[in-house]
Length: 292
Image 1 (cartoon, rainbow, N blue to C red):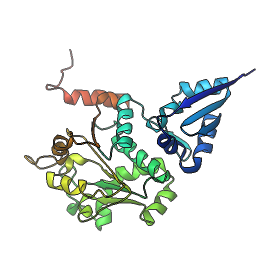
Image 2: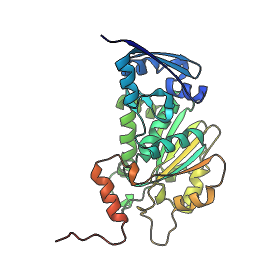
Image 3: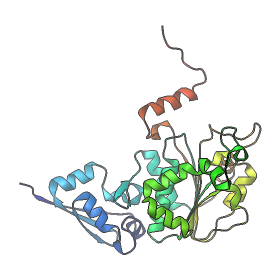
Image 4: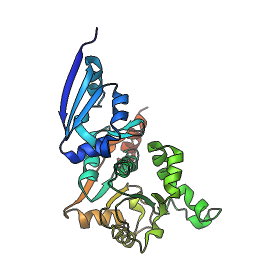
C-alpha cells in the first residue's frame, strides 16, 4: 500500500516561479498531470504531495522543480529540459543575460534550447514576439541558384528553425502565431533598419555572418528584448580570409555586463552517441589509422 509523501522546494526567486508556472499559474495543471502529483505554489515555494513512489520518481527522473526553469520547461504537454551541465549553464545564461552568445558543435542543443526559452518567455507574457534569424550562406551555395520565389529559396536555410518551433508547439499554433506576426522567421538581410522591442531575437548559424552583419544584427535590439546568437565556429562557410562575425563578437563583447558567452563541447552532444565520436575524430590534427 502506498504512503503519502510531501516535499517542499524553493526556487531562486519569484521570477523563476512565474517562468515555470506561467502567469496566474497557467501551466500548473499541465505540470501536475505530467508528474501525477499535487502541486501547491506559494510565492517561490512549491509543495509536492502524492504517493511516495510518485514523488520519488519525479525527482529521480530529473523532474525536480527545485531547479526551476533552468532545468525544466513545460511547453504544451511535454517537458523540455537541459540534459547536460553545459546545457543547464546555457539556459541560465539566456535567462539571466540580455544577450547570449553560444558556441558549440552540432547536436549540443544550441538552437533547440534557445527556441525553448523564447517560447517559454512568450507564453509567460515576458515578451510579445519571437524573431528567428538565419544568414543565407551554406556550404558554398547561394540562394540565387535555387528555384522558386524568395520564400522557396530561403526555405532550406530556415528549415531547422521551423523544425525546432514545431517541436515546441502544435503546427497550427505556429501557423497562427506566424500569421499574426508574433513569430517571425526571417533571413538576416531583412533585419536591416529594424528595431524589435519586447522580443526574443535568435540568430542561428551566427558563424556565417561577417563582422558588419553581426554588428547590424546586434544593434536591432530594442527595449525589453533579449538576443541569442548560436553558432559552430568550426563550420564557417564564409569566403576564405573573411572574419566570422561570431568570433569577432565574442572577442569584443565578452567583458561587457549583461552579455554572456557560453561554450558547449562534445560532452553536450545529445544526438546519436556516434556523433560525439565523429566530432572528436574531426577535431584531431591527424586522422587515426585503423590497426591491421
